[in-house]
Image (tube, rainbow, N blue to C red):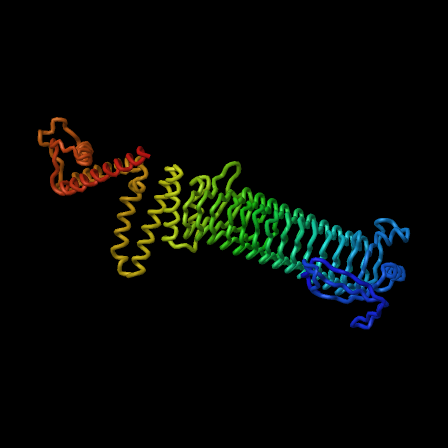
Length: 582
């Protein structure tokens, strides 16, 4: 039966109608489906069964086979009233099948507080064309419940407080037009729950406090075109959950405080509109949660206070639209946003995350990692290939940046160097010059190590000269002054160098023919140690009074010391001025 009609017309004729399975109805219902212009788009024939006869079938505990029937004004509330039963007293239905049927009612089709005892329940291909449809508090058996290819044209749907057995619940390929679809406090049992390819043209779709238990749950390719989609306080079991390629339209999507369990959760390629999406306070026992290639609109994405300690949350290649993203005070085993465009504010002040992957991202706004009122505990941070056009807000010490980057066991020294270089530039732009220096030191150290490794890899013989050259660079540029970032370190290196040469002069005077001689008769009667210290000072500082001069091998050592002193004084000047100018 086609879904493409906007109105319909019913005629009941006193003609027998025989179904394909041989059932005979005394009357035939002719249903003409009409388009916007009131033109016929299809004509369907049904057996007509009067409501009172249905009630008598219930009285007699007969099977309710309503396949290919037109059913009008069916209501168990009316039935209970006419039979003197309580408003919430359960009515036992022995089997229920309404395959390819047509329901209409002035006051709503009501199966509430019913108990389905035997057999599968099928409304496959059925149209509910007028009035609300209620299965509120219905108890379904352990067999399959099938609402696939069903049309709900005009009226709210109420499955609140319904209880399903171990059978599957199939709602795929259905179309819903109403104000509210209500599955609050529904218990779906342990079978498959499928809303795959279903269209929800409802202002409010509510699964608040719904229990999905251990069965598979599928909303694959479903389309929500209403105002709000609520899963607030819902609980899922161990089965996998799929929202793959689901379209949420401009609905506010509410998964706050949802309890996921151990299954894989799939939102890959799902599309969100221009309203907020919230997973605030949601929990996952363990598993994988994936949003690969999903698309978000102008709304904010909220994962604040999420507890995913043993879960891998993945947003690889996701488009985040124009909204802010917050993972504030959340906990993850791993969080991957690889190859994403981060064009708006991103709050990554997570309480705990073993692996945070921002590799190959393009960041144009602020990425906030700096602790404020709690510790941001990230073990590994991967920034490989990031293009940072915005800012990363973090602190070298409180974020333990060096440790986070070095935890990348699979990254090369060149890749580590590039990440430290990017952080160095970021700290410079944010005015954190002390952190800039620390990042620069790590950049130069890893760059030197990468140069050494790559040179030896090109030609193993390069090791014979590369190792001595890198050792010299390490001593002079790194250890002496931390690449001109620490003037105190340079000053300390100057003192060490001065004392080193003084010691050399003492040894040479005592054990060789070399000496330090006064050109003015040694009026102060300096000892060997005093002469070594004095000569070393005037040589290191390039003063050169000429009152003492070296002889022997000390002459050559004095030349070396003069160069070292000149170099380290220049080194100190550069490091000192660099600090002052910033």
